[in-house]
Amino acid sequence: EDSLSKLISLAKAYVSLEKSSLKQREELMSKANDTQSKETELRSKYQRLKEMYRSAEEKVQSLSQKLERAKSSNSQTSKRHDPSSTKRRQPMGTLAFVNSIHDNSIRREGTEKSG
Image 1 (spheres, one colour):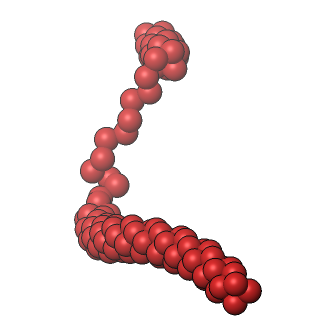
Image 2 (cartoon, rainbow, N blue to C red):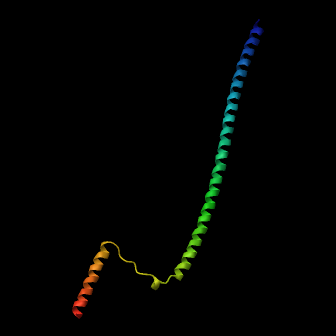
């Protein structure tokens, strides 16, 4: 009887350890699956970001080329620019009104002196 009770208690301990071990394995498998799904998600995010970075680099390169072309065409047009051929800008608004009064008064003075 003594050895039988020892065997029963050992069997119970074994079953208990087996259940504990099985539970730990399930937890580890669950964590491994979670980690694997997170890894997959992060890899896809990395790939998307990598593509966005490449696209941004291409846009920057394209804009840089356009800027260089614009600078070179602007420098060519500025070389062709003749300042004597451009008309002087007319002042606008109140300043134009004041200037016209001044111009008219100078003309009147000139005609009065000569006349």
